[in-house]
Image (cartoon, rainbow, N blue to C red):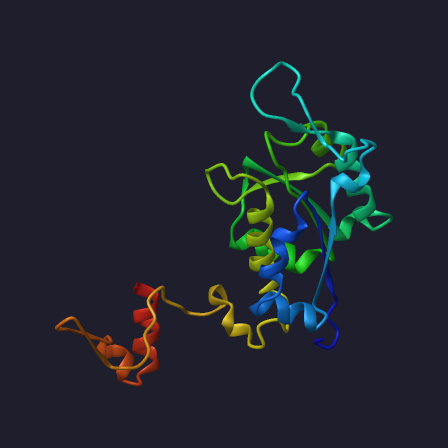
Length: 220
């Protein structure tokens, strides 16, 4: 672990913790866990319900298709995650399509301000709306579309936040937004021949002129 760095503890409330297995077991997130930069804990609402069959979905008031996640089991799972932690160092996130749009600036704030992130993943028609009010959760979206559940948004948030923690990538310049970068990148060969056509690396990248290269990166 980087000297002086603290561990970011990510608490995930989900009905499907297994959905995270492969993502957390590969690449950057795996290294971050191995180095002690992050800790990830799961809380399944099914483990907090009184229902004999561990059912946590109920019919919605007012009618309509689908089922709604009951508030009690989600609140109990969240209470377990939050415990007696200082709320100033803890952020509770509730994923909804009409929430605040997640972006680079938001990820930077989460990485620099908080020691605990509680990510609540909905399913079915959603979670009883009283949960976010009771928990004073902030609603967040990763885009103007609806997904089956909150697990994918939680993975996106984890990835974007964790790679900004000191020592995770090894080199601070690996965080693209913190350096002069371009969406277009090239490697060898200098001339790529594909189906009878030649595709060349831009000449400016071969000059060794750092000022010209930096200017090119800003404009592409």
